[in-house]
Amino acid sequence: MIGPGKAELLERIDETGSIAAAARDMGMSYKRAWSLIETLNAMFDLPLVASTRGGPGKGGAVLTERGRAVLAEYRAVEAAARNLGAAHMGQLHAWRRKPLAAEG
Image (cartoon, rainbow, N blue to C red; front, side, top):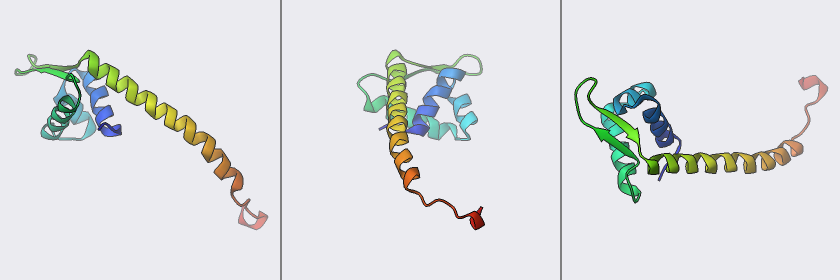
């Protein structure tokens, strides 16, 4: 569905107003970025990105209201997972063997 890479692409499009600039920032081809956007737009009930075609200075891309909502919800899921994971990681760290003095 949506993962860290697609979320970053959406954020960069929101920041730059351009699919090409977002792709460039991520070291991704425009074709790959456009393919990911098409996939995202097709999988949700409303498009996440709206783009206008045009040459230099005439085209652009923006996140739609649904795009911003999906991105915010994904980031909330990430934060919840980090918080839940932190509690479990604390227990795992508590069970670790303590280094011997000779091990440093």
